Image (cartoon, rainbow, N blue to C red; front, side, top):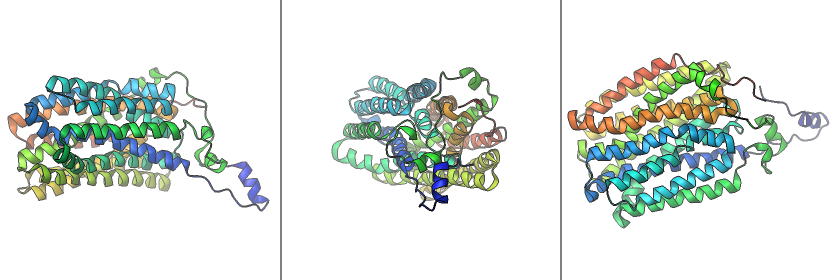
Length: 433
């Protein structure tokens, strides 16, 4: 139920025109979408440039897997510290700092001269990006209404996938004109510009933002006290969270098979040239962008119609995982690359259909501690992503490129089963002010 603005109601009764709410929360959402896009753009630069870097620096496919693992394990291990950082100091300062940090190390990747230097830089890159999603989730927790949360998370993750989708053709052009090192410097500069804009515009609550009027504040809801110390005991003892986290392990493993290895797969398994690969690598990511938008929107639509948060999250997500698993089988077995990529688009659409829903659940159950709750989920999820970096390369070396994609089918089915146990209506913190 939306809170009632009593002052506005009285003015209506007196015959005065109703104040129209400002839309600052939508600008905040837009800035957050850009942050998500930048995270995946910066990661995708390495995924696209990997074949060129591999040849120039003489790095093997397996060693490239360990370099990617180094980023992802650092990213996973610092999820909880990153979420705590955002909950403790506020999203305005915290997100400015972490985006500045990782943008510097994105640019420094262009200075790598061998495998060890690149691995070291990727560790520090991962440390910085670790706080991005938990802090961004925290940034929206006081700005978005409950019936907008699934859509908001869908839009933000759509931004990340759209950023990733647009990156391959851009990087291919930059490599052709200026070399792979320049591409990392250019994308690092974009992040620094965003950090400056965020610190200038964003405020941690609607009450602190001078451009938000009373009508929008009433629409969002009353001000709450800043959270105190994070109740880690309650969070970590909540069994529902661990089921959510294991589900996200399955999702993230599958996600990073696409994000990290799909461009290399197209070159090695289908014999594509770099320029052609840039186009085809973009298509599943564009389909995933649509999946992000559709899944989050549809979940919120079901919630508005039924009022049942658990039903609206659970069954919509299960449908996405089943579609993804089923579509992957013909994608792997298709004889020509065009048909294969078409099925991969359907598979990635289904996978991404689930992600806005998964990130809405920490908002549903965690409230003001959504950053810390989502950090736990994303920690285990990114352990899955880190393992995929090495599992894929060893599977490819031993069994070929079909093997890792068949693994994603089994993990989709496992995630669907786990969603049967996830209860989005069971809150972790019940005493928020």
